[in-house]
Amino acid sequence: MSALEQVLAGKSAPVGDFHVVRALPQVGRRLVGPFCFLDHMGPATSVGHATSGVGPHPHIGLATVTYLFDGDTLHRDSLGTVQRIRPGDVNWMSAGSGIVHSERTPPERFGQSILVHGLQLWVALPAELEESAPSFQHASRESLPSMEADGVAVRVVLGEWNALRSPIQVSSPTLFVVAELEAGAQLEVPTAATERAVYVVSGDLGIEGTALAMHQLAVLTRGEVATISALTPARLAIIGGAPLEGPRFMMWNWVSSRKERLEQARLDWKHGRFPLIPGDSDERIPGPGE
Image (cartoon, rainbow, N blue to C red):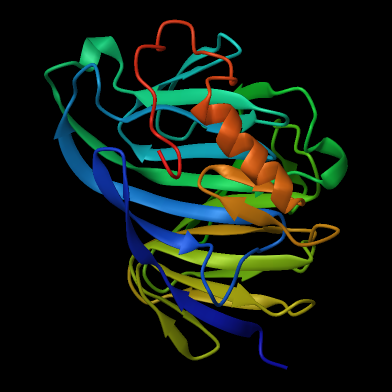
Protein backbone atom coordinates (compact mmCIF):
# COMPACT_ATOMS: atom_id res chain seq x y z
CA MET A 1 0.00 0.00 0.00
CA SER A 2 1.20 3.52 -0.77
CA ALA A 3 2.30 5.63 2.19
CA LEU A 4 0.81 8.71 0.52
CA GLU A 5 -2.97 9.08 0.84
CA GLN A 6 -3.67 12.63 -0.35
CA VAL A 7 -1.90 15.82 -1.49
CA LEU A 8 -3.51 19.23 -1.02
CA ALA A 9 -2.33 22.70 -2.07
CA GLY A 10 -2.62 25.53 0.46
CA LYS A 11 -4.81 28.53 -0.40
CA SER A 12 -4.19 32.26 0.16
CA ALA A 13 -6.27 33.88 2.91
CA PRO A 14 -6.20 37.38 4.53
CA VAL A 15 -5.30 37.58 8.24
CA GLY A 16 -4.52 40.79 10.07
CA ASP A 17 -1.92 42.84 8.19
CA PHE A 18 -1.00 40.22 5.60
CA HIS A 19 -2.02 37.19 3.61
CA VAL A 20 -1.27 33.65 4.75
CA VAL A 21 -1.34 30.26 3.07
CA ARG A 22 -4.07 28.08 4.62
CA ALA A 23 -3.40 24.35 4.37
CA LEU A 24 -6.22 23.29 6.73
CA PRO A 25 -9.18 23.14 6.65
CA GLN A 26 -10.00 22.48 3.00
CA VAL A 27 -12.92 20.94 1.17
CA GLY A 28 -10.86 17.80 0.66
CA ARG A 29 -9.70 17.55 4.28
CA ARG A 30 -11.09 19.00 7.52
CA LEU A 31 -8.89 17.33 10.15
CA VAL A 32 -5.57 15.54 10.55
CA GLY A 33 -5.68 13.95 13.99
CA PRO A 34 -6.94 16.79 16.23
CA PHE A 35 -5.52 19.51 13.95
CA CYS A 36 -8.30 21.48 12.28
CA PHE A 37 -6.36 24.54 11.07
CA LEU A 38 -2.90 25.33 9.68
CA ASP A 39 -1.88 28.79 8.50
CA HIS A 40 1.58 29.50 7.08
CA MET A 41 2.50 33.14 7.78
CA GLY A 42 5.07 34.82 5.54
CA PRO A 43 7.89 35.13 5.08
CA ALA A 44 6.85 38.79 4.94
CA THR A 45 8.52 42.00 6.04
CA SER A 46 6.67 44.87 7.70
CA VAL A 47 7.44 47.87 9.88
CA GLY A 48 6.41 47.25 13.47
CA HIS A 49 3.87 49.55 15.11
CA ALA A 50 1.37 49.46 17.99
CA THR A 51 -1.56 48.08 15.97
CA SER A 52 0.35 45.68 13.74
CA GLY A 53 -0.17 41.95 13.97
CA VAL A 54 -3.56 40.51 14.89
CA GLY A 55 -5.85 42.43 17.24
CA PRO A 56 -8.12 41.05 19.98
CA HIS A 57 -10.27 38.15 18.82
CA PRO A 58 -12.00 35.24 20.60
CA HIS A 59 -11.73 31.45 20.54
CA ILE A 60 -13.69 28.53 21.96
CA GLY A 61 -13.26 24.77 21.81
CA LEU A 62 -9.66 24.68 20.58
CA ALA A 63 -6.03 25.24 21.46
CA THR A 64 -3.99 27.67 19.37
CA VAL A 65 -0.36 26.78 18.61
CA THR A 66 2.04 29.52 17.49
CA TYR A 67 5.50 28.62 16.17
CA LEU A 68 7.86 31.12 14.51
CA PHE A 69 10.80 30.56 12.17
CA ASP A 70 11.67 34.29 12.00
CA GLY A 71 10.53 37.45 13.76
CA ASP A 72 8.94 37.78 17.17
CA THR A 73 5.55 38.70 18.51
CA LEU A 74 3.91 39.65 21.80
CA HIS A 75 1.02 37.45 22.93
CA ARG A 76 -1.59 38.89 25.29
CA ASP A 77 -4.76 37.19 26.42
CA SER A 78 -7.76 37.67 28.69
CA LEU A 79 -6.12 35.52 31.39
CA GLY A 80 -3.63 38.37 31.80
CA THR A 81 -0.82 36.48 30.05
CA VAL A 82 1.88 38.62 28.43
CA GLN A 83 4.38 36.43 26.59
CA ARG A 84 6.92 37.27 23.94
CA ILE A 85 7.44 34.47 21.43
CA ARG A 86 10.69 34.14 19.51
CA PRO A 87 11.81 31.78 16.75
CA GLY A 88 11.76 28.17 17.91
CA ASP A 89 9.48 28.85 20.91
CA VAL A 90 5.92 27.54 21.09
CA ASN A 91 2.75 28.97 22.61
CA TRP A 92 -0.15 26.62 23.44
CA MET A 93 -3.32 28.50 24.42
CA SER A 94 -6.31 26.33 25.31
CA ALA A 95 -9.48 28.38 24.75
CA GLY A 96 -11.93 25.95 26.34
CA SER A 97 -15.16 27.80 27.16
CA GLY A 98 -13.78 31.10 25.84
CA ILE A 99 -10.69 33.30 25.66
CA VAL A 100 -9.60 36.46 23.82
CA HIS A 101 -6.04 37.08 22.65
CA SER A 102 -3.92 39.29 20.41
CA GLU A 103 -0.50 38.92 18.80
CA ARG A 104 1.27 42.25 18.34
CA THR A 105 4.67 43.75 17.60
CA PRO A 106 6.71 44.06 20.85
CA PRO A 107 7.01 47.77 21.77
CA GLU A 108 10.81 47.77 21.46
CA ARG A 109 10.42 46.74 17.80
CA PHE A 110 8.19 49.70 16.84
CA GLY A 111 9.56 51.43 13.75
CA GLN A 112 11.85 48.53 12.87
CA SER A 113 11.69 46.33 9.81
CA ILE A 114 10.56 42.88 10.96
CA LEU A 115 10.62 39.62 9.00
CA VAL A 116 7.71 37.45 10.10
CA HIS A 117 7.61 33.75 9.21
CA GLY A 118 5.84 31.00 11.10
CA LEU A 119 2.94 28.64 11.55
CA GLN A 120 -0.34 29.12 13.39
CA LEU A 121 -2.25 25.91 14.07
CA TRP A 122 -5.44 24.99 15.90
CA VAL A 123 -5.97 21.75 17.78
CA ALA A 124 -9.64 20.89 18.35
CA LEU A 125 -10.29 19.89 21.96
CA PRO A 126 -11.94 16.60 22.94
CA ALA A 127 -15.67 17.05 23.59
CA GLU A 128 -15.22 16.69 27.36
CA LEU A 129 -12.74 19.61 27.38
CA GLU A 130 -14.58 22.01 25.07
CA GLU A 131 -16.04 23.93 28.02
CA SER A 132 -12.99 23.63 30.27
CA ALA A 133 -11.33 26.67 31.84
CA PRO A 134 -8.95 28.44 29.45
CA SER A 135 -5.22 28.08 30.06
CA PHE A 136 -1.84 29.01 28.58
CA GLN A 137 1.54 27.30 28.20
CA HIS A 138 4.83 28.51 26.73
CA ALA A 139 7.99 26.54 25.99
CA SER A 140 11.24 28.13 24.85
CA ARG A 141 13.32 26.88 21.95
CA GLU A 142 15.91 25.61 24.42
CA SER A 143 13.35 23.48 26.29
CA LEU A 144 12.05 21.70 23.19
CA PRO A 145 13.90 18.42 22.51
CA SER A 146 15.81 18.16 19.25
CA MET A 147 18.16 15.87 17.38
CA GLU A 148 20.51 16.14 14.39
CA ALA A 149 21.93 13.35 12.25
CA ASP A 150 22.74 12.65 8.60
CA GLY A 151 21.68 16.06 7.29
CA VAL A 152 18.41 16.13 9.24
CA ALA A 153 17.56 18.41 12.18
CA VAL A 154 14.32 17.68 14.07
CA ARG A 155 12.62 19.68 16.83
CA VAL A 156 9.69 18.14 18.75
CA VAL A 157 7.16 20.93 19.35
CA LEU A 158 4.22 18.82 20.58
CA GLY A 159 3.93 15.19 21.54
CA GLU A 160 6.59 12.50 21.19
CA TRP A 161 8.99 11.58 18.38
CA ASN A 162 11.44 8.67 18.67
CA ALA A 163 11.51 8.87 22.50
CA LEU A 164 11.86 12.68 22.52
CA ARG A 165 8.90 14.38 24.27
CA SER A 166 7.81 18.02 24.26
CA PRO A 167 7.20 19.63 27.68
CA ILE A 168 3.83 21.03 26.51
CA GLN A 169 0.85 19.21 28.03
CA VAL A 170 -1.61 18.45 25.24
CA SER A 171 -5.32 17.67 25.39
CA SER A 172 -5.25 14.44 23.33
CA PRO A 173 -2.57 12.42 21.47
CA THR A 174 -0.97 15.12 19.31
CA LEU A 175 2.17 15.34 17.16
CA PHE A 176 3.89 18.45 15.81
CA VAL A 177 7.49 18.19 14.63
CA VAL A 178 9.55 20.69 12.62
CA ALA A 179 12.43 19.38 10.52
CA GLU A 180 15.13 20.83 8.29
CA LEU A 181 16.75 18.59 5.67
CA GLU A 182 19.85 19.10 3.60
CA ALA A 183 19.54 18.25 -0.10
CA GLY A 184 19.64 14.48 -0.49
CA ALA A 185 18.81 13.76 3.15
CA GLN A 186 16.00 11.42 4.15
CA LEU A 187 13.61 11.33 7.11
CA GLU A 188 11.47 8.35 8.07
CA VAL A 189 8.05 9.16 9.54
CA PRO A 190 7.06 6.43 12.02
CA THR A 191 3.51 5.20 12.55
CA ALA A 192 3.21 6.09 16.24
CA ALA A 193 0.58 8.76 15.43
CA THR A 194 -2.66 7.39 13.98
CA GLU A 195 -3.05 10.23 11.47
CA ARG A 196 -0.10 12.17 10.02
CA ALA A 197 0.51 14.84 7.43
CA VAL A 198 3.60 16.61 6.07
CA TYR A 199 3.45 20.33 5.27
CA VAL A 200 6.20 21.76 3.05
CA VAL A 201 7.33 25.09 4.52
CA SER A 202 10.12 25.58 1.96
CA GLY A 203 12.08 23.59 -0.60
CA ASP A 204 11.13 20.48 -2.54
CA LEU A 205 10.47 17.00 -1.18
CA GLY A 206 9.66 13.57 -2.50
CA ILE A 207 7.55 10.80 -0.96
CA GLU A 208 7.44 7.49 -2.83
CA GLY A 209 8.12 9.11 -6.19
CA THR A 210 5.66 11.98 -5.69
CA ALA A 211 7.25 15.44 -5.74
CA LEU A 212 6.00 17.94 -3.16
CA ALA A 213 6.54 21.70 -3.36
CA MET A 214 6.24 24.57 -0.89
CA HIS A 215 2.71 25.09 0.52
CA GLN A 216 1.58 21.53 -0.17
CA LEU A 217 0.15 19.25 2.51
CA ALA A 218 0.69 15.51 2.09
CA VAL A 219 -1.58 13.27 4.17
CA LEU A 220 0.07 9.94 4.94
CA THR A 221 -1.65 6.56 4.95
CA ARG A 222 -2.51 5.14 8.36
CA GLY A 223 -0.15 2.43 9.51
CA GLU A 224 2.38 2.93 6.72
CA VAL A 225 5.92 4.14 7.37
CA ALA A 226 6.76 7.01 4.99
CA THR A 227 10.23 8.10 3.88
CA ILE A 228 10.68 11.76 3.00
CA SER A 229 13.51 12.67 0.62
CA ALA A 230 14.79 16.23 0.27
CA LEU A 231 15.24 17.12 -3.38
CA THR A 232 16.60 20.53 -2.31
CA PRO A 233 17.35 21.99 1.12
CA ALA A 234 13.92 21.92 2.76
CA ARG A 235 11.96 22.76 5.87
CA LEU A 236 8.80 20.90 6.80
CA ALA A 237 6.26 20.37 9.56
CA ILE A 238 4.79 17.00 10.50
CA ILE A 239 1.42 17.15 12.25
CA GLY A 240 -1.06 14.55 13.43
CA GLY A 241 -2.31 12.48 16.29
CA ALA A 242 -5.35 10.47 17.27
CA PRO A 243 -8.63 11.39 15.54
CA LEU A 244 -11.31 12.94 17.72
CA GLU A 245 -14.43 11.10 18.83
CA GLY A 246 -16.62 12.88 16.27
CA PRO A 247 -16.81 15.70 13.70
CA ARG A 248 -16.06 19.33 14.47
CA PHE A 249 -17.90 22.40 13.21
CA MET A 250 -16.17 25.72 12.62
CA MET A 251 -17.34 29.32 12.39
CA TRP A 252 -14.69 32.05 12.16
CA ASN A 253 -12.40 31.53 15.20
CA TRP A 254 -14.65 29.05 16.97
CA VAL A 255 -14.64 25.24 16.92
CA SER A 256 -17.19 22.94 18.53
CA SER A 257 -18.76 19.50 18.34
CA ARG A 258 -22.14 21.30 18.53
CA LYS A 259 -23.32 23.71 15.82
CA GLU A 260 -25.53 25.65 18.22
CA ARG A 261 -22.49 26.47 20.37
CA LEU A 262 -20.95 28.39 17.46
CA GLU A 263 -24.00 30.65 17.19
CA GLN A 264 -23.88 31.27 20.93
CA ALA A 265 -20.22 32.28 20.64
CA ARG A 266 -21.07 34.65 17.79
CA LEU A 267 -23.73 36.38 19.89
CA ASP A 268 -21.48 36.48 22.95
CA TRP A 269 -18.73 38.23 20.97
CA LYS A 270 -21.16 40.64 19.33
CA HIS A 271 -22.69 41.67 22.66
CA GLY A 272 -19.43 41.94 24.60
CA ARG A 273 -19.79 38.86 26.77
CA PHE A 274 -16.24 37.60 26.22
CA PRO A 275 -13.55 38.74 28.70
CA LEU A 276 -11.21 41.63 27.84
CA ILE A 277 -7.44 41.56 27.40
CA PRO A 278 -5.66 43.65 30.06
CA GLY A 279 -3.55 46.21 28.21
CA ASP A 280 -5.13 45.55 24.80
CA SER A 281 -8.87 46.16 25.09
CA ASP A 282 -9.38 49.29 22.96
CA GLU A 283 -9.82 47.33 19.73
CA ARG A 284 -11.82 44.27 18.73
CA ILE A 285 -11.98 42.40 15.42
CA PRO A 286 -15.63 42.24 14.27
CA GLY A 287 -17.17 38.80 14.12
CA PRO A 288 -19.35 37.25 11.40
CA GLY A 289 -22.39 39.31 10.54
CA GLU A 290 -21.13 42.51 12.23
